[in-house]
Length: 331
Image (tube, rainbow, N blue to C red; front, side, top):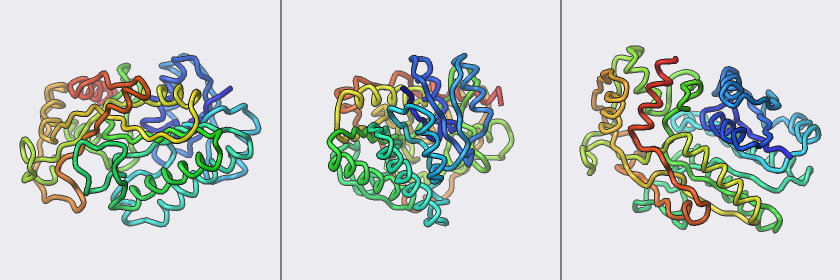
């Protein structure tokens, strides 16, 4: 039986595909390359020395989904596919709601038709909104401050409803914190199309000289150095979290929500310093006003992941920056 990885050519999807293949799983990747590239598929093959089926297309294409499920014996879906830029979601809310929510509904409808009852869902710490105290625990109230975040909140509720209606369905909702890093081979890493939305690709472009400086939004937060603090997690640790979630879902029914982070916060300036140390390159920065909706600090309580999934992060911020620097050299 196979595992369908939607968005498997993307940043987190490609690293998870490598880890799945390394554990002997048979995978199928579906991707439309909206924020990824075909070379990531070549990288997955190169690292794993294994082959897999690939379908190019949109998850909202019902005929394509039906063909994927009809041509393969799919046991589970690891669902990464989705638009993910917070700022863009504010400008294009209908596009985000249609793509992320409608796309997920199309997948779930096809899963139901083909009797596939396991989904591992790519959620986000965004669902904790602005009003919860840190560290964030899975039992806290969810909300959002932008359309991207609301799509994650709504999809979590959809999956909980599916599990309530079908007692044989299993869904693990993984709330990611801030993934950075790259595969230690330097073969795959984060390569967004266009201007980066995440901080690490931006830091890398400043270090390489492509951009003049990094904008640091806010230097007057109540944090160690006044800059925002986030829970950065190595993408390979995150990928391994999906393997642990899949193993759990195979043995348990119902919906579970789990944080994936390190449980430790790192400020923007600490991250810049760590990258400068790892790469040997300067990262000039200027302070800019706080962005609307940003919070001072955000990090996870990761005790549930350890207890429920037997998973915990292995890599620290220096490892993450070293692997990003290696990927940047390759680029």
